[in-house]
Length: 416
Ligand SMILES: CC(=O)SCCNC(=O)CCNC(=O)[C@H](O)C(C)(C)COP(=O)(O)OP(=O)(O)OC[C@H]1O[C@@H](n2cnc3c(N)ncnc32)[C@H](O)[C@@H]1OP(=O)(O)O
Image 1 (spheres, rainbow, N blue to C red):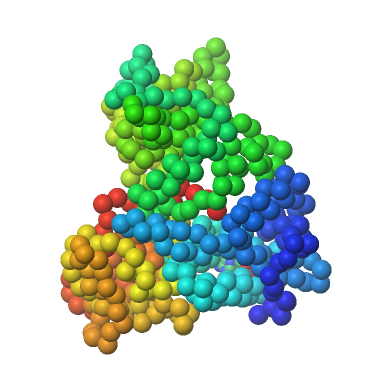
Image 2: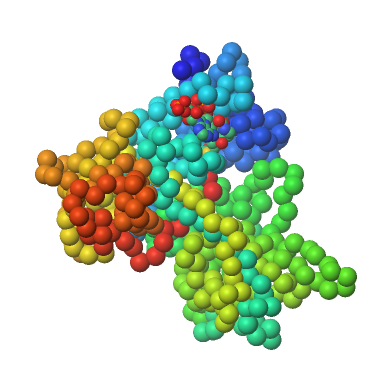
C-alpha cells in the first residue's frame, strides 16, 4: 500500500486536483478556464466531497463523491453516495491508492447513513472487489429512417400535442421540473443539480469544442410539458444526395405519447437517413413506435450504473415488490462492517420488512449480486445458473425472482 497522504481537497488546491483528474482520464492535463468554471459550479452546487493523494506538491490521485438520490423500484428516492472522477496518475498506479480512497469514502457514506453508493464504471473489472455490481444497462440505438414505415408527409403529433424548437434558456426553465416527474417513474434514475442543465445547454462549457445542439419540447394538448430532446446533425452528402444523421444527446419524456411524438419528429426531419442515440434503456419503446420495428437496431449494449449496497435493511425496505412472499438471504460482504449478514425479507403490497435473522437461508449471494438484482434488472435464477448466487433451498431463486422482478428495466440516463 502507498504511504502517500490522502486528504480532503480545499479551494486553493482545486486546479492541482483537476489536473490530476485530466491526467488520469488522458485529457489535456492543464484545465482550461471553461472547465474550471464548470466543475467549480457543479462541485459547489452538488456539495462535492473531493479527495486527493499528494506526492509532494503534486496531486496524483483523485476521487469525488456527492449526495445523490437514486430511484428505487416503486418510486422512492434513496440517499446515495455518488462516486466519480476516480483517477490515479500513471506514475502511481497499483500501489493501493484507489483502495484507500474508496475505502475512506464508503466508510464515510455508511457513517452518514447513505443506503447505496453509485458510479459509472470506466472498466468492468475495477469495482466488483469493492462490493459494487452492475445494476442498469444502456443501449445504443440506430434507426434506418427509410425502413421505419413512417409517412413522410405527416409531421404532426397524435392527440393534439405539439413540438416546438426552443432555446437553452427555455430548457433550463422547463427541464428540471420535467426531470423530477421523470425520475419518480423510473427505477435507476438519479437526481440532477441545476448545473446539469447549464452544461447541457452551453451556459457552462467544458472546453472550446462545444457546439450548440437543437432543442425541442413536446407539450400535450393541455399545454403540459411532457418531453424534451437535445440533438445534433452529422452532415453527409453522397454526391448530391443528403444522407445526414441525427445524433440524439438525450431525450426525456414522461408519457409514451410524448416519447413517440419526439422520435417521430426526429425521423421526419428532411435530409435525414439515420437517427442514433446512446445510453437508452434496453427495453426502450423506440422500435415499437415505428410501423416497422426492425428499422431500430441496438448497435451497442453495456452495463451502466453500478451499485454498492451500504445498508441491506433500508435498501430492501425502500423498494416495492411485485407479490407477497418471504425469503431469507445470506449476504456475503467481503468488506466487513457494511452490508453483510442474514436477512429475512417479508414483502407484500402493503410494504416490506427486512430483519436480521438466524433462520436458515434460502439463497447465499454477495453484496454485489444483491446490488445487481435490487433494481430489478437481473434475475436471481440467471445468477444461480452462472454460479454467482447459491440456492440453499431448491426453487428459492425462482420464488425470490417473483418478488424482485419489476415491470420495466431500470434505466439511468445520466453520466456522472
Ligand atoms: C467512477 C469512475 O470515476 S470510473 C473511472 C476510473 N478511472 C479510470 O479508469 C482512469 C484510469 N485508471 C486509473 O486511474 C487507475 O488505474 C484506477 C483508478 C482504475 C485504479 O487505481 P489504482 O490505485 O491503481 O488501484 P489499486 O492499486 O487500489 O488496485 C486495487 C486492485 O484493483 C485492481 N485494479 C485496479 N485497476 C484495475 C483495472 N483497470 N482493471 C483491472 N484491475 C484493476 C488492481 O490490480 C488491484 O488488484 P489486487 O488487489 O488483486 O492487486
